[in-house]
Length: 272
Image 1: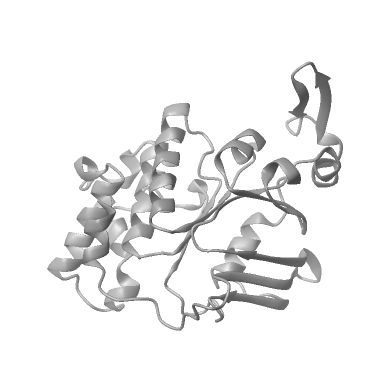
Image 2: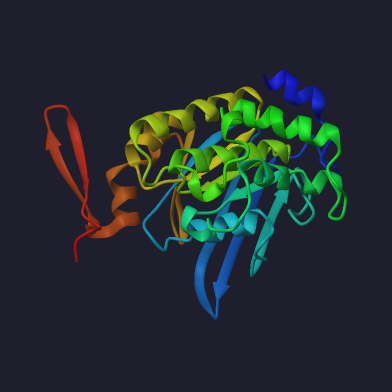
């Protein structure tokens, strides 16, 4: 199916230096009204890598996504996409949290996915037949063909996430950033999303997913990024999720209990 999508691509992203890291963040600092939101953030991401972004509420995860996507300028430091600033890049897809979306807006699933083509078509250009063919192929890829003309407010949580992934495919994104897409999804819906992540990996699409689930971050991602305003660790999850790093990130909200099977981590952030 990805071969079909590839054959329908209309153009290639511009201003890409193939010799540069796909994503490079260097000494990034962000301040809101003088208050630090992010400090000393530096890391690199290669094409095709899938990373779990983990940290407590208010750690700066959404801020990091906005800076990488070019929505929010950094106070200092640099973000480079294949050697260039993120401004103007249409290969980056940022999928916000579900509660940031107006689900009552009268638009269909097919229309939302077509929004991903705007960067390729031009802002005031009507979709051509090949654009609709591309959108239909993306919907088929995420198993939403039967819901193409459904109003978005009628979708389940898992269907909403698959719709946004289809929009990223329609955008021909090479980096997909998703802000807590697994929240509220049952096990089957989560598995559907992870199956699509595997297809994205075969297409060499990079993925960064913000999640609170340390188990899923350890089991389902190539790398983990532990964030609490500054970068506390970046690398293989089994190396990053050490007791010291997790205590630095979460403080006393995490409890560590030794069992015969190993160390059990309990999150009590729901409690005062």
